[in-house]
Image (tube, rainbow, N blue to C red; front, side, top):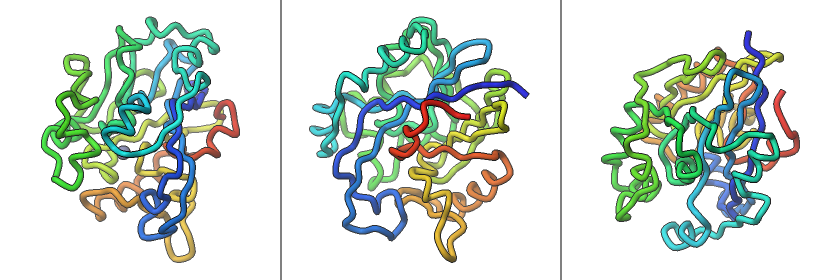
Length: 250
Ligand SMILES: [Zn+2]
């Protein structure tokens, strides 16, 4: 068992975010702050990143109409350097899916290859029309396409570096992947937007888990939830402020 450590980095926060987008048909009208998390994996043969964060706030506001906060403390380069990681030395990035708030900022990591599922690339190229906005499909330069030429395409599960395994888990998007990370405390799964908040995973009375409101196929999503139960001891959500209460996992 490899002994990675998982450091959550906040790449910018959604302000007054409609919570029901995260919790299917629940919490309508409730507004929350939600970080866009990037994950730095340390303690292995090389530093690894999971997800790349959102576009700058001005661009997010213009394209999506969402208020965002990005202060100096959200600077990814500074946060990496605080952990003695030089961005130019990052060679391996895995993205959970290709939505705009998970795939921007690759320019900061010029040597990185970006691991993504083939099904996600295919869907990003031609999303169903209610979901075009999440991929910025009507923009001249969608964030996921700015990384063209740097993708390494995965067909299902694969150990990308020792102790870091990509798992194809269709749900939030058809090609979403969760990243299993072996730590001294067992496997943690970085779940991407299949699990936005801890409460998605924790569920509610009568609901083993709560899906988000964005998906193509709910049956696939629930099957992936069931599979995630077998893959990891702990599940880390993608947009929960509570993640940042700990500087690292485990
Ligand atoms: Zn998403």
